Every structure is written in C-alpha cells, then in structure tokens.
Length: 155
Image (cartoon, rainbow, N blue to C red; front, side, top):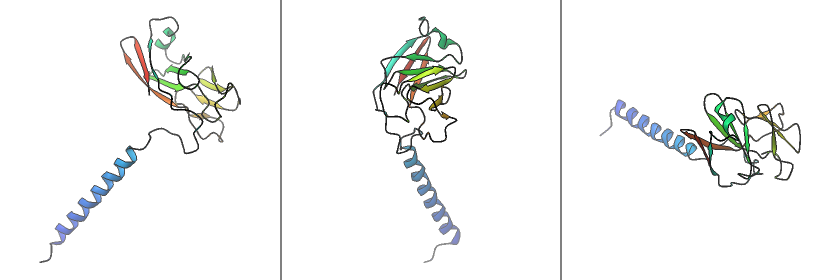
C-alpha cells in the first residue's frame, strides 16, 4: 500500500524539523562565549562576589560608564561597569596574552588596556577588542545580577 504524497511530504518535513531542532540544541549546549580554540590563556577561576552599591568603593557603579576594578578575584581581578542598560563584568586579565604580572588591564575611560602591550585594548561595555585586528579573544565575561543595591558577580 503506497502512502499519499502529502503524508510523505509531511513525514519528510517533520523529520527535517526534528534534525534542525537537535542541531540547534547541540549548538546551544556548546560554550556560549566568544572565544575561539586559541583563547586559552585564562583559567576558569570560580567567582562569586557581592558588591554593595551603597559602599563608597562601588558607589560610582550607580552611574553609567564608571567602571570599577575589584582586586583578588578571577585571574587578575574583575572590572565591573554600568552600561546604562545593565551591568557587565569582565576578568581584568588580557585574554590575548599569557597570564603574567603585566597582563592585568588598567582602566582608561571605557577601555581596558593591557600592561604587557598597549595595543591590546578592549571595550569595557562589550568586552570586544578595539582597533587591533590581530586580537582574537574578547574579555572573559562574568554574570551580573542586581538585587536591590547589591550586585552579584558569578560565573
């Protein structure tokens, strides 16, 4: 007994949708960062800190575009910034340089600048490299959640 053409087409369409679903699902299970396989200078260090915005050292995070450096966390500290629409946090280590004493970024306005190579500059809004096409890796991001006047930074 042969199937009707519309049933065959329906079956093929259903199978294609199932394959597409599982293909997209497997992509979603991969690491969600923007690193390529050569971005392996930084360690996956556990981060779980809270920043009280009422304290003077974090008060400037109540206002957009005032990044704050938090030492002794991540690989070389963490840089937290209020983007105006939310908060972002990045590891303060240059992801395109071997981890060393000079690889900590300094804050220059809304840019993070590597102490090892001044051409390694990153946006402290997006984490993306700036003006240097040879930089393959963006800054290592951390999650930021706000609850009242406290920011929770985790990975």
